[in-house]
Length: 81
Image 1 (cartoon, rainbow, N blue to C red):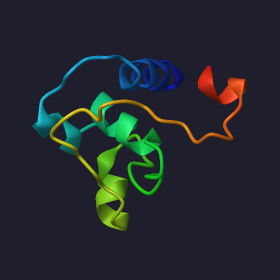
Image 2: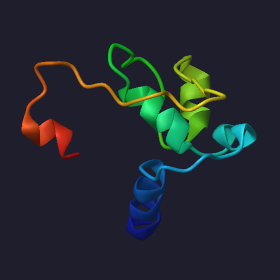
Image 3: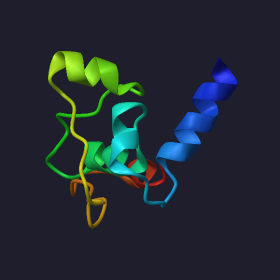
């Protein structure tokens, strides 16, 4: 299970486009970027979208957010993640 989670974590951080429908089965890189977008931290908490669908925190963007924007107070350690 740990290996599967590790591979999934790598997938979320790839800079690739994925089909929109995939977001209903697994978290897509586009959804993960949306989760980290500045001022947006209210969606896509789970690796499996079923939980976000159940709790009303699901967001499956059709397009990739333009850029990952960190808040100004984020330190160097936060940018390396």
